[in-house]
Length: 198
Image (cartoon, rainbow, N blue to C red):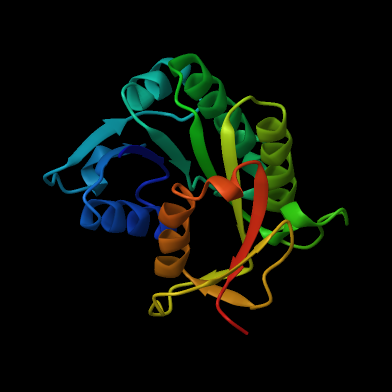
């Protein structure tokens, strides 16, 4: 596949790019700063702001699937994340790219009001979910608990429309889930909880 990855230089996004290339996919990495990525065979780098429709359309053109591992950098930047997700969804729809995978935290699987230092992130993930539900795309949301930089296990536990039982998930295992999910038709239109095995 040709996969466009938004958030390609982040902790999880960089793993998605690396593993996608290892699997033989072509990757279009959408980044704010192109200097953060080394050119590689099979990798196209597009620099821009994910809220800019023309830049996003340029990155998505010709792709078979889109992955967004964007996140909210600071609470005070709310709603930049959900604005970017809406731009990506609209651009994918215009381009006729059906398959979309978006990452989130477990707040997206709860009706309880997000609280604490990550409340803004939780609200943004819920806005993203509403945007996806209102679209005509073949979407999946991967919802993880605490995403950590621990060495990956090479596996994960996934639960459809519910939180996975584990308390954390290494970035490399989250990336593995993301790429596996693109090939799972049974996960289309669902929020899938993913974690390490408990």
